[in-house]
Amino acid sequence: MLRSRPSGGPDGCRSWSPNGCPSGRPSRSLTAEPAPAPGVDVTSSAAKSQDSYDVIIVGSGAGGGMAAFQLGVAGLKVLVLEAGRNYDPTRETPMFKLPREAPLRGAGSREKPFGFYDATVDGGWEVPGEPYTTAPGSSFLWWRSRMLGGRTNHWGRISLRMGEYDFKPKTRDGLGADWPLSYEDLAPYYDKTEMLIGVYGGDDDLENTPRSSPGVLMPAPEPRAVERLVHKHATGLGIPTIPAHLAIMTQRQDADRLPRRLFPNNPLAQRVLAESMRSRQACFYATPCGWGCSIKANFQSTTVLLPPAVATGNVSVITDAMVREVSVGPDGKATGVSYIDKRTRQDRHVSARVVVLAASAAETARILLNSKSSRNPNGVSNSSGLVGKYLMDTVGAGLGGRIPALEGLPPHNNDGASGMHLYMPWWGYKDQMSGKLDFARGYHIEFGGGRGMPGNGSFNFLENLTEGSYGTKFKEAARRHYGTYVWFDGRGEMIPNEDSFCEIDPDTVDQWGIPVLRFHWKWSDHELKQAVHMQKTFAEIIRSMGGTPSSEPQTDGNRAIARGGQIIHEVGTCRMGSDPRTSVLNEYCQSWDVKNLFVTDGAPFVSNADKNPTLSILALAWRTTDYILEQLRTREIG
Image 1 (cartoon, rainbow, N blue to C red):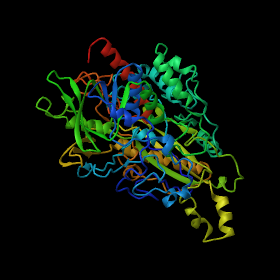
Image 2: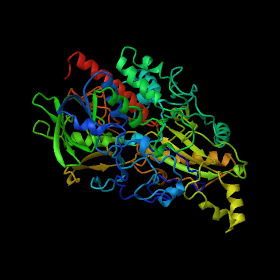
Image 3: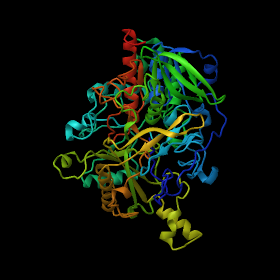
Image 4: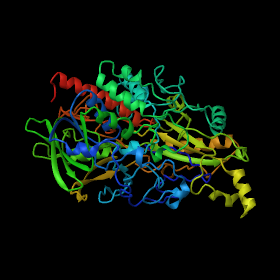
């Protein structure tokens, strides 16, 4: 989820870092600043809401938005409950603003760690009145987006498929656990999801890096100059560099063909999807995706999934609805959810035949653990005792460097999508299997640089190169050195361990009176050694380009690795499996204990491959909704 937007600032600082320059550690999030705007008609939907539905969905992000759309076009009456406020990126985005127009010139701050114009209008690593705690000796950062569409408004849009190895990791090396499904089970849903949301990219026949089916992906943008230079030198080191996959449209969607292909026997789905696709424009390569996108070129739930879902007439949305528990009847089936109306602070209950939790991995675990009763003293769907367990994040480490070969370049086209056009998939499978590496699993590399729009701090580095020049000499130095820095980020697999989990803190509640989460976190030696390997590799690439790393690569994994939760890829907590004793959900993300309860966010993940999780969350959610519809049709549930 963490955006991979290499800094245009050649000082190597990244505005997103909660520890590094210039943002500093965030202490609290910014409360809602602009007046809510009705992107999705939540006001009228709430007003005409009823007390009973076919399906209640908790959360409106990737997993919740996909479930709402799929179940709505299938004709079910659906209620979506969102803990945050309404948000309309077509009206609220500051995408055409310049950093110099913003407070702090757009730099990150304690309240806005990703910069003042970041699309996260309410939320962050800390939310006022909604604390969380960490156990002694643990360090964990929990990002929450309290807004319609959740984290899909903010993320980096990197959309990588998990591969064959990623679904059966224990079979390969004996560590962690296997998924109860294979890549072949999810491949058709990856294809459909990529066509639905719009993903650009290219394919190569590389190990554990699956191709999309022909005609699914949009054309990838041409590599920028700096990306071509990195490609040349990385290739020389045996590291492949291929087109990145991002959920950004490089061309208009075919609104006449795609809806019929995706929903061949569903006129309602074809109509609302065609209208939605016609409202989206191709990216014009001018603004940061993370600020929001009024032309709907990138994927976010608030522009791609929720509007056509509501347009079916079957989906209602209520925002500012803080869900605290799932209710279960005497027959052991979920009957609905209880939530707090944040505007009135009143407690409400809504009923449904099916409950879908998509509140994000940790929030979903919190809801289940807080759903205690005499029948379920340890929470709902927790007969295995595994709710909250095996929490994971992505392994992260970064390093930048200055490349003299990029000095004094003539003006050239640096346009492109907001993010990378190329990336490096993990290439070390054979060395790993032969025992040449001291850690399991792998990582991919995201990178960038060049002469993008300067941001705050872009020229802070100059004092180290110009010996205090000013005036004309300073301007000449800026033209010579700007765009000479390259930044590399590793995104690696974390193996689930028993020491990383969340539980209910017995002593703390939030402002709504709901018990909060307490996090326990521990990296294993595999992740720590992987982070060291990342920085060493980045330094090798930089030196092969004739450059100098901004710092020496760390040899201590604890110093190289990002903090738990910092990459904002937390998954696990309700893992799926084939045995109710060792998992919370079955392969369709259905609770073993409560047959009409499903989870469609990152909580069902069994492992956390190096691939960014959002595309897999979307594909799994689609697969789960197909199963829900079949279960309802055959009267197995509901």
